[in-house]
Image (cartoon, rainbow, N blue to C red; front, side):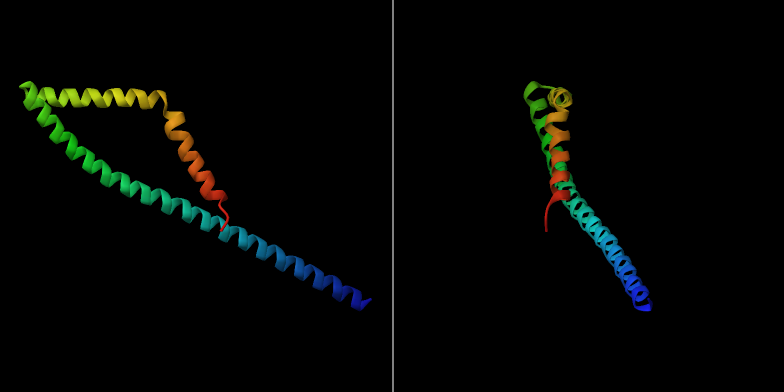
Length: 115
């Protein structure tokens, strides 16, 4: 009888250790996936910020150049800003298809990626 009780205690100890190990493994996998997704997003954000600074300065130069061509500097800025208004309207119309879905798919692929 004592042998039977010892076997049951060992079984419970092993089950408890297995459960702790499984929970710890799940936590570590979640941390790994989160870190992978966040590092990917932050690296893309960094590149996007640098590109945005480049685009900003190019747009100022383009606005000044167009303004010089049409005779009034401020008209160049109006023309360039109208172009960006058109782009903003197009992006708003297609935001789910062009922005939301690719970002969602990127996050899902990163989260489900096997090591």
